[in-house]
Image 1 (cartoon, one colour):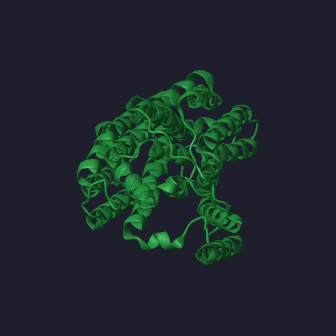
Image 2 (image 1 turned 120 degrees about the vertical axis):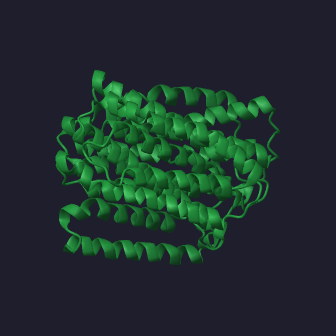
Image 3 (image 1 turned 90 degrees about the vertical axis):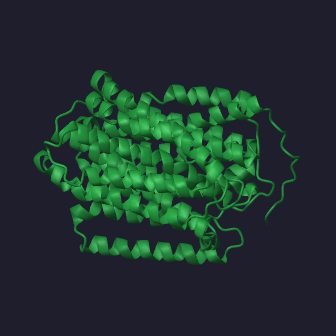
Length: 468
């Protein structure tokens, strides 16, 4: 039976308290982003330390993103039911404990398993923290600005991750990468106790166990096929069986969710062009970002012989572009709607990808830095309109689910990006890696073109409406 929880209206927070809540919640976004970028730059060192190749490194990244993508929506529903602050704090604790295991792992199997547990903890952070922010900031214009700041935090983590990771790997070894996030975990836990108010959805929702199982299975199977396909062969019996399982799980998810009174992911939501466009855009942006991060790491360190700190420093233009443009994008969404920032995002991403379609081992550093800068700017402009549209597409009482669907789309894009990029270069020698990566840069440009299409379809509407 579905229960209804009667709650008093949440207290109206002062401006200082609202922005303090935003700052505390942004720590979780910083933690999730830092973990992605700091591990990426350390992948070659992890491979050497544990004796694994590109495919094992793909699983090191995607074990985290697959679990994260599969659990995000349930975590949002749990937060709406049992308390957003409580679930947020639980996620921090799980993430921190798993990071300790990652830092002490003695095999790739142990590392991949610990990364999966990190994904469990991370699933309770990003969407739940976003729901806390949305609940604390009821004014649509202020919320759009806050989401812009929220998105810029990922840019900050991009700046801190590769550079910090490169230095840590060079000075202390790859295990130090997993110690780095622990101070952030502790700080976020302490600050959430003091400053973050508890909040819940006004109506508790049933957990959708069949939908959760089918969603997780579909994501894991399709990403797994992309990772293992180059090794086992795309027409091998194991691959054909995986295609069948993936198709059944996907079709079953749609069928089951269409018939449930309270589905994990309501297929009816995707009848809204604005909502569907936001989800598709989130996938495209994070495919482009993760293709860029993985190909860049392997190219600079394997093909060009950069040290980890130098490879991290080379990504600084990307991080600066994302950091500067994300809050600007939030302001544009609040004033003019989604179309302009989405157009800018698509144009810059397309330009960045096209810069590198002719990549070789002697490509000049200025062209590399220009491409990274354009991609970072495009990423910075993309997140605010996509996130604001998705959050505005659902009732405020389901803010946890709204944030979770957007974050699920991001992580699906992340997992697909890693799998696709890894598949391109998995069997390449350092001499051939640059040429093998060229289709990846075409894919980045194609993701930018898709954003341009979505921008053209977007309604020019202020953030105060539901379809910005």
